[in-house]
Length: 573
Image (cartoon, rainbow, N blue to C red; front, side, top):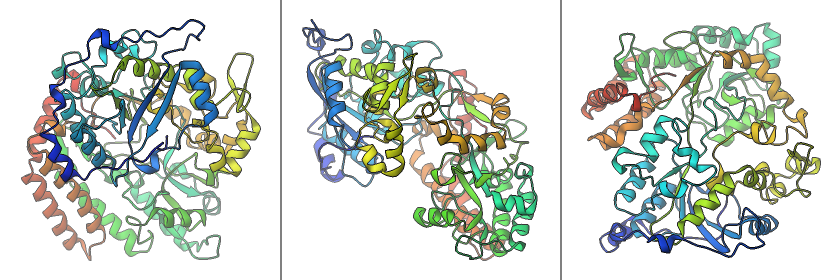
């Protein structure tokens, strides 16, 4: 991700809202066709030439997601190829959505804006949708018709349902589109990475106990395993006693995959179908109290670290690096500390409705960009984005400069230089300064990361695989242990909307969102309650708030949406 080129101070929301009445962008007329056409002299220019101009964009993204400014050598190459000088600026705000809200309210926008958006249910959607309804953004549909990559968005079934009907081509806009959803895979079911996530267990403990980690499929089996681990008196790297079950690698949070036969619905959605087809929230089932009883048992018997649900990320990671937990509740096979596979996958666990089955989205999107109506020659930005999304553009922002950062094989695919890979391992900060995605600087992803298929484009699944296959030997070994290929072959492909994606259409949206958050918080409080009676009181209060906030009505809305093929709801795990 790209870091800011310049500082931008965000107005306080209170101050900005005073400007809304004075600055109504919705009254602005769309630029005339003659004003949109930029016809530079392209004689002697490369085929990728667009225009000799500067394009500036603002990234409404959290600061830790934003990369540094573009490497000068790469900026020069980009200029030679397209004529474009790209300037990116970040925002100074505690929360990116606050900056986005303030920026749109003030009508103080650059030539394009980038923001988070993984589905129509994300909170940014209501902010940008309001701007589109007020006429703040350029219609992108006519501008992508003659592009090489983005014109694919107009093809039938290229986009997932949520992107097509919920984000980009919403029925209310009658064919116009104002939000360019990003990171769309080229093919349905495509995975850029063969990925195993969820619980992992120390390999030396597996060997010492003589168990098969794949045999642990239920919460009861996990409990019995945790007791065996405790009885084994295993130690960490410092010779201290370990906890059988530790937190996520990234810090304390509930992890449904740790005991998924006690969790109703996907994490952070908690909505699923009963056997008779009724759509209900977890609070309306027996599973919350079952899970509370289970967790309280783990905590009381010291089988789970006490701060499992609350531990800060740095402390969790430090404990994991020290081997302080036999089982890590959630990590994945590509983490650097585990390239030697000394932690291996556990499970996977059964679900409440049966044995585990890999679930894959047909396609998904993540991040988005828009062009304000005030931007002159918006087609230049669309053409530039299309270049960045092409193989030639991706080669530049994902791999850097030929000769400096990579060479080409006989088929024209990049072979990353060994010295670049070594620098990335030894000095990540210095490597990132080279300025491309492979070393951690993703400036090109904001406009160019879509139509994704690295393997088809560059003949490698991960950056650097072709030059150093041994770098991912550990992760690939883990995939084999887990049986990834067989599970992938039997995976279920889903296309539809997440259960909470329709909140923006619900009249009690604010109340229900607050109640859902309280429910999640209450579950954690209940885990730490003195006993099950106290836990039930906490849960009953949260459940009552959900009912008062209209949960039943929202479930009725979901049932109606699910009956429409264009708004099918994903009610799986």
